[in-house]
Length: 253
Ligand code: NDP
Image 1 (tube, protein in one colour):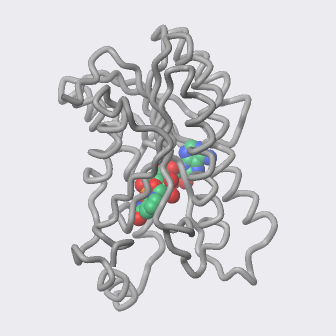
Image 2 (image 1 turned 120 degrees about the horizontal axis):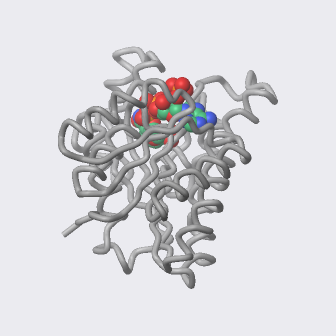
C-alpha cells in the first residue's frame, strides 16, 4: 500500500520543516520528488538526503506567489520528466502581529504566498495532471483556519489565508473530479519546525497551548508527512474535498 513508484511529485517550500519531511516521505514510497523553495540553494541538502537513501530527487527555485515562475518551473519539470502527478502546496509564512498593526503590505504578502500561491500551483499542475486523468493535490492548511478550526491571536492574515485554503480545496475538488484529480487539504496542529521555533513563543504560552492538546506534545513533521503520503496514494482514491486534521486531538478537546 501507499506505493508511489513512477509518480512525479512536486513539493513547494521544501528546503526545511514539514516540506522537507513531505519530500523525504514521498521519495521513500518511490516517487521522484521535485524539491522546490523560494530559496533553492538549501534545497540541495534535502535532495542529497533523498539520494543517499536510494531515492530520486531534483531541485528548482520556485516562488509560489509568482505566476510566471510557477508556469515556467512546471513547464521545465514536465519537459524533463514527462508528467506531473502529485503536488504538495506546502510553502507558507507566518508573521505574528496584532490585527491593529497588520499593514496592507503584511496582509498582501501572507495572502499572496499562503493562498494565491496554492491556487497558482494547483491551477498550473492540474493542466498537466488532467492529461493522464490522474492527479493528487494536497494543500497544507492549519488548525488556525477558523470554522471547524480555531482563531489564533496575532494571525488575522494567516488564519484568513488558511481558512481560504480549505474553501479553495473544496471548490477545486468539485471542478477537478471529472479530470481524475483528487484535491484535499491537511491541517496540522502545532508542529516542531523552524516556523514555530522562529515565533519564539514563551515557554509558558507553549505549555498552555499544549495543555489543550490531548496528546500533550508538539507534533513532528514526519507525522504530518504520513498523512500527505496517504492522500497522494492510490489508496486515497475515494477521498476528495476533505480536510485531514493532524493535530494531536487539539480540535476534539
Ligand atoms: P517553515 O517556515 O519551516 O518552511 C516553510 C518554507 O516555505 C521555508 O523554506 C520558506 O522559505 C518557504 N517559503 C516562504 N515563502 C515562499 C514562497 N513565496 N515560495 C516558496 N517557498 C516559500 O514552515 P513549516 O514547515 O512550519 O510549515 C509548512 C507549512 O505548514 C506552511 O504552509 C505552514 O503555514 C503550515 N503549518 C505549519 C504549522 C506548524 O506548526 N509548523 C501548523 C500548521 C500549518 P524562507 O524560510 O526563505 O521563507
